[in-house]
Amino acid sequence: MDKRNRIIIFDTTLRDGEQSPGASLNIADKLKIAKQLVKLGVDVIEAGFPVASQGDFESVRTIAKQVRGASIAGLARATKKDIDVCWNAVKYAAKPRVHTFIATSDIHLKHKLKRTRQQVLKDTASAVRHAKKYTDDVEFSAEDASRSDFNYLCKVIETAIKAGATTINVPDTVGYAMPHEFGGLVKSLIETVPNSCKAVFSVHCHNDLGMAAASSISAIVGGARQVECTINGLGERAGNASLEEVVMSINTRKKLLKVHTSIKTEEIYKTSRMVSKLTGLNVQANKAIVGKNAFAHEAGIHQDGMIKHALTYEIMTPESVGVVESRLVLGKHSGRHAFRRKLASMGYKLNEKEIEKAFMQLKGLADKKKEVFDEDIEAIVENEVVHVQEKYKLQYINVTSGNKTVPTATISLSVHDKGRKERTVQEAACGDGPVDAALKAIDRITGIKCKLDDYKLRSVSRGKDAIGEVTVRIVPVSGKESFVVNGRGASTDIIEASAKAYVNAINRLLARTK
Image (cartoon, rainbow, N blue to C red):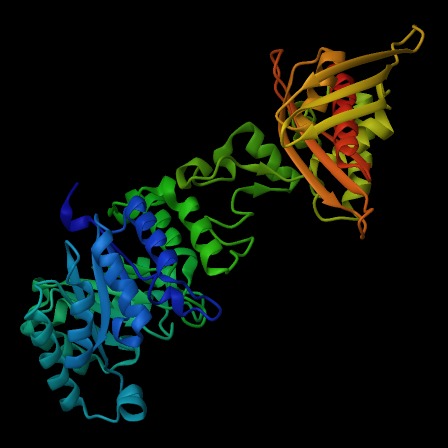
């Protein structure tokens, strides 16, 4: 691929992303994210703002020392002190970068910096030259570029390149520009600045008007070859351009944009989950690419299209970003095709009359709750349609266990076979623990081979004598079909509750296989 059409992905999750209100990361968290960003394939990791605090300095230095596979950048204001501190943090990196910045809009010059345009020009040249003494990889940002006077912005950029900057960043610091406007600005700067060919032009867009990703893509069309972004779009105020949105826009519209990145897109979802967990900032359900609903379909028309051909309603595959599969969510907008498919995946074989009865029950339930879960469908089918008959009932349980005793369980079940007299069967088994022993004894009685896929215990009341509710999920290990079955049981004795839940799941499994 043509290197001129490769977009450098500059990730600033650890710097601008951490500035999101409510987000705070310790050194261990930052190091973990940085290593995952390398797996993701980002080209530059902006690890922090070293002069901001001793903690920030230490985290940047730690990442510079331990992370390989990407350039490590630190942010510095256009002052000698900031740049010195920044270099002392990033100098341990295999590929260190100093990223220095100064505001260029008259609003910032007058009200924040209280400096003249000429003074800022001198500061720009001085800062870049000083950074250049340490490293050849110097990036310069003209803060609030989108609200700066165009001719003056050209002079500042020309000065920075002349002083040695190899990357010029054009930020839409407050998310003010419209996408077509911002793309036009970048294009005009590249065409107007005399020495623009000596630097890579970069963009850093904020999302105050929800335009960050669109403005970044527009800037690429205008000639930008680096995009600064964050995982999940984290950042000051409304955040930055979202890495996943920018990258997947490029991947999905390759023929139109004619550019590419080095991102391993299958790592996107994993990285998103990690950042969300460590920052404590949840991803909104309808967030593009990584939101819970990004590959979920509820409307009947959409579900029908998805069943027939996924491309009808998905422009990218969930697997391409690391999501396991699409979801057909059952709710009041769902259709019969999706419901039939769901029933089949759960192991139910119903005739058309039974399916129609269950479907009408589903619609009634969906009017009362937004999303219908597998457990709801089980209840509808087994209580309202097929009326599951319990073949097995727990009669007796005795368990011995201790830290120096092999856990052993004796189980007695009553067996109800159609057309036959009720009988009682008893078995004993040993296990890794009392619950394991009890379940193995039940397996010996029933002769059914299944795998315990999930086990959950919760208290449904308070106090020492609280009732414990156990939920289990089993998967049959024999036969051509594979599906999961849930079971529940409750008791003040959690071993008894576990046995009840397991027996309940087996009865449901038998009902489905019939």
